[in-house]
Image (cartoon, rainbow, N blue to C red; front, side):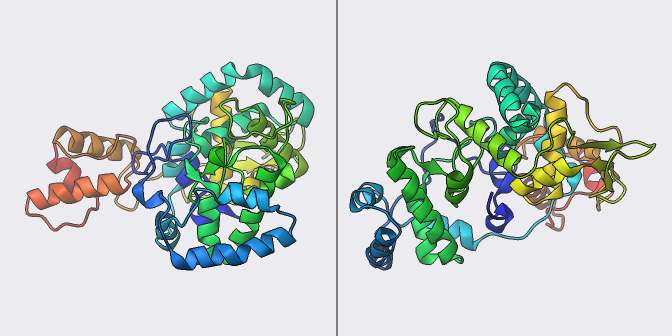
Length: 380
């Protein structure tokens, strides 16, 4: 997109990877989840004054009074957006944890079903744009869980709140202007223009400026509708984005390197873990999200959707001396003992840490929330 989405704590972790048991889920318009009360418009005199001043700047950039009136009818200051923006913490996951989420059994099986369901669309996209259709499907899977988690926060409210009171006011004002141009063009009405708390929209989470630059009307109905239940325009827009950033037709993204002469540059994101031989198309995927883990996640998930198997090189034990199987066993035993880990996937996120802390507290142990071999043995 035209920025690094990690700047907002988004990318695959908060959107495409929202299916992780340790993450909160924001569902798309197709689901029935209600908005968090903190994501409802709240009276704010400073925001109202900012909007009044913004109207003149918007009109100077070609936004009509009618568009402004429609866009801001019912819009308002969202305290939850500022809370999300202010509370972002820098964190890293190991590649092993990342891939456990990105290419989970559920994400693979849903991806294969989604690919089969939209096979004709994917085939047409490959013909037109030259992009591997499994890569497009994998991006869809990481960004919105194949459309199930598109985000339900009004984009005008989110971007205007961040433009008024965020850390990057000028950036989000440009996103707000772009969102208004999208409304003015008739691609979507204001009530359907929803997305993430930072304004990423639709099946494959385009920011408004990226939408203006790359979105396409693949269905031919006169609208670039990336919010529709039909994902065709969103998938085509992703294909167009990758194509325009230099995707090479017929070139794989890369592969797990198992020996011989590598067919590309070698990288090893996690010490002691698998190595990957990556090509130019790997770098193109990184234009979507500038992260090696994200690009490997997309590539590996694409391979799995196409029928490939898991990685063959094992990952080393984590810093606690636990393998993935150990972590799965720990979660399973905690769950059996009545502690909610949020799932059994081998990824020890906040819910698992809370469960460990609760168990430690119940046994009179130091409450660290950290796993260990001794804790695993204690749980029997």
